[in-house]
Length: 104
Image 1 (spheres, rainbow, N blue to C red):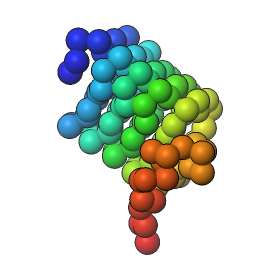
Image 2 (cartoon, rainbow, N blue to C red):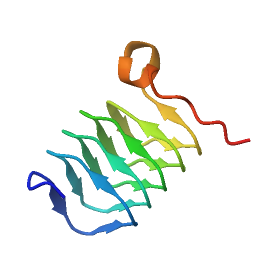
Image 3 (cartoon, rainbow, N blue to C red):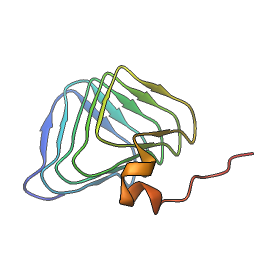
Image 4 (spheres, rainbow, N blue to C red):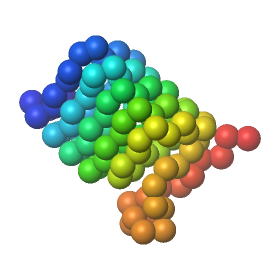
């Protein structure tokens, strides 16, 4: 974990969680297995199920994300289904490069 990560308890982490530099996690956050929190991002009052990816420069608050979700920019009070994408895909080159998973 980079030195620039700030964790404000209570926080619960699953296995193989990746926190990139300049992230702030907490309070009241549960992060599932294999989630990635991008650099310069904040997560608070949220539950992120496994394989959720928070893209860099994002703020996530009071959000529940389903498995294999991708969140970016500002998300507040969202409930995201499995495999969901929250953000402006058409305006974000990084989002356009990420394939949307098919969970049929």
